[in-house]
Image 1 (tube, rainbow, N blue to C red):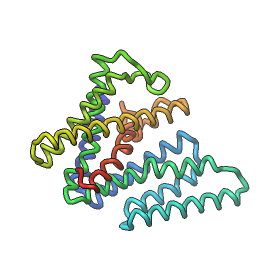
Image 2 (tube, rainbow, N blue to C red; image 1 turned 45 degrees about the horizontal axis):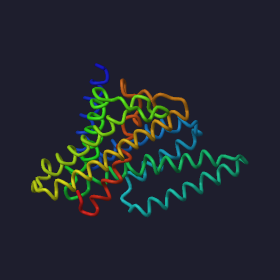
Image 3 (tube, rainbow, N blue to C red; image 1 turned 90 degrees about the vertical axis):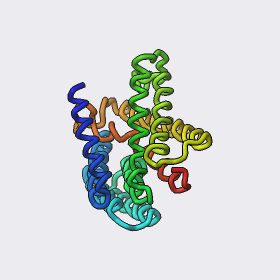
Length: 261
């Protein structure tokens, strides 16, 4: 537990520094997170090393480039063509690996890119904290609700320690996270309408975060692994810490696009 707390403290400090500085520093931090997460994902599914190097190159380009999203997606399709061409000349059937590579960009790289893009909104300095707040508070409330009240364990095949009570506790944490952002950081008027809309958003986001955690557990269970990696003592790998965040971020980004954050 001590090691877990120490890792959490310097991890939060690093995230806070990157979010505060923004710009090139946030992109460097995000590119490093994406690189380590891709390495963990590719190691889990034993993807070929050359695919990893090409993926790192493309993911770095996607995060640092000022091209629009459509152009970046086009580059991803070009990348798909390149992998298929290379494997065809090797005269091998590697379609499963290629599918894993393309999925890794949808699952890891583009959500991290959207996290960087949150910082570019007019209220980006505060908005970028929403995914973290939702995930951290949902996780914290789920843990303590599960610890004190948890009896109904309905995900025994995927994540045996998670309980239905913890799930509802996570929803409370999600609501509080959105309220804190709306009424604390953004200074919105404390009225019933905003309160109810924010509560709905918080519950939906907490369910998404919980689903992200469960999906990551599915991937690990499939490969009979406990963690994605060991780079974060007491926490496992980068993907073990970002599994909820990468699910929540795209939802928050599009809600912000429609002026709901």
